Length: 440
Image (cartoon, rainbow, N blue to C red; front, side, top):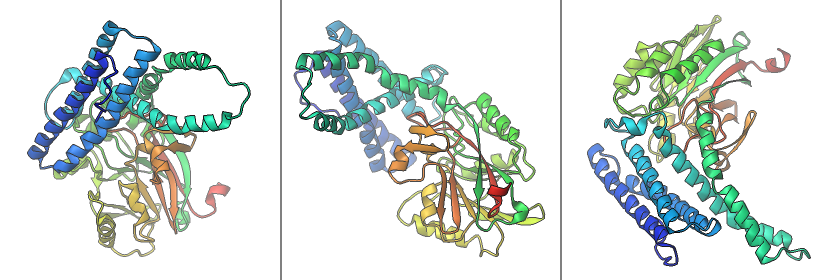
């Protein structure tokens, strides 16, 4: 939560601080109430909100103080800014609290206002990250410039910093707004994946890998139809989904999903596992998927005949609790039956499971979940993301013994922040037998 001990601030900044404290307390109270209604862990709700609002509030107070000093905002302008920011806070909170309920609030979910919360929150996240890294960067600069004979005067430095402040204060909001377009910049990314034991008869098999569609809100029928068209245009032999189809917004939010999936065509069908957002009513949901041509694999495998060769497509249920997750995944894999030399593609929503899956349980594991890192810098097939720097599989190909994992950047996104620098992906994987990738 924001600090409470700076009485040197103008009255409008002190009021902002009290507002942020009250907003945090209010969100905690609502979270406690919701946790009782839906039997969700109370501690997790409270900790999540505090961790969410702490950096948010810190970034807001820094921004207000920066505006007050670098732009010399007076009392009237300061109060106007504080009130406008509070309105945006309220919209963001309302969107956050109603994201998984049946309450109909069409105004805050519209095409324009619906982006207020994501842009508002993600811009504050950028400010907070800048604050975190500013200290170490400043220390490095001071060390690099120590002993330099041409140091600027304090007045020159102050004028320079004010100029930078005026130009840069809106940068996080500009970057965040750019994420609106990036979030729906759907593209097909084709790449070859060589598998050590992939049979020559299946060389060149084209697999469309879709994940984290997250229907709801702005992910509407028009956008999902575009995804279906791009997928069909890639001419896949088979379409494999790795979960998180749902987002949970307003009643009937998921109807566009089924209409779009029914448009996708592939000779060997569509197959799926479930993601962590797909379990509110999985029996109903699996039935709806089947109705539009998607077969869901819940800790089971299906055997297909492709080009005269048997192929297994298997899917694992999502392990919600970290303690014992490796054991549950191992038990689920054991339940698929022994490997008999039949090629197997395993669908597992969570890419972190790859590190502990039984050795040799599949030729290729497909996952989503991380949205490609969600925030970072994408250069071709490579990216620098916070998720990747923390050691989690964010996107691309990973290898362990004779198994390979492909983590897609995914189609959609869930909650805050919106995609920043990491575009969505319809992955088209061309599976290759050993040595074939170089010769074809």
